[in-house]
Length: 251
Length: 204
Image (cartoon, rainbow over the protein chains, first blue to last red):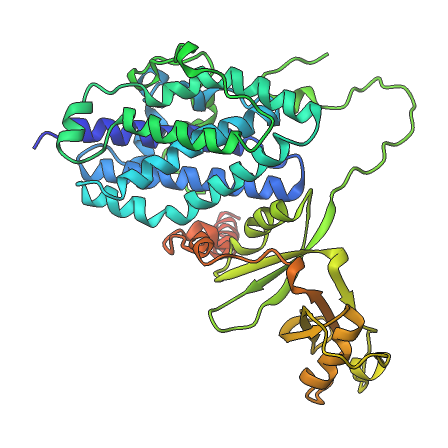
């Protein structure tokens, strides 16, 4: 059986989790309050752990071991969407990205609990507790700050408008949509985007934030094909620094 | 002026700042966190979190208090909703210091009651009483929940003030048992130190 479509799906998911996990971990020790610092760091660690689980599935399909895959590829070999590699900027942007991405992530894994690829379906079922927390965290903050003060609302609104074209890039069409759907592996990016839109609309409608008309937004795509912003390579260099000095290091 | 894509760098304090008054602390209020370690076990006080409101206190308490050990449920309440009896020590029961209530009606509000059975330990939930206010709740608790065993301190919290975990939210604690990196012991700090010391001994 040709595993190319399945591998492509696993790679883009694993790379999303790894890169955003690393980005979010940059807030560790710098969060807006201690409790939030702990929660955001925990979720970043969850994401890196989920990427490991996905790279392990790829390893079982014949790819290199997880450390090699994570630490030795260059930016143009990564399949993450560009949204996850953008610098953290201020906390409003990090929160909006967390909300937009994690909503899609939780829905994607929820769909994958029904995947015909059993190891993936099992993983999706196993991590649902973590994903439930991530979306609870994101939704609660967005509802709070999206209706709190003029400053919090305008900051989130600005970040939302900046992040949306990148967020639509999460759903960049795969070369293998038809094969994945036909094989019952994944219901497809389009189906996911529809569920995602309904969910973020329902949360944003409980705030003072305005969701722009998505039809008027040009999605920023290319990440899934290895096309990235200038920000990914420096992140990879930093992430793989220890591995490159000593690939056998344990820490 | 530093200018970096990393906001942390931009926030570093300026070195040449003029002499100015110290900025006041900007802190959120506190919320009390209670955790249920196992199904069927009582909730116990675990600590506090700072948060802008009750719902966010719940969200932040989950990771602050229940990431590194297993539990089945937690709840939070605004610190200002916790009513505290006099604190005792030795052979004095806190219930003996609670003032008598003027009314003897059962009351129509539900209160959760907690006992401190050992100094330095946590308050543990012992039951629920109906009363009109926290003072009366303590009097009713003395009748209903005082076993005669020394209690050093009693708390009463109106049930309706508590943000509980719903049945479906219990999924939050379904984490991966193989994720050993969540346990401090997995980092084997002691072993690494021992190995290092042994290695340096040989070298000298």
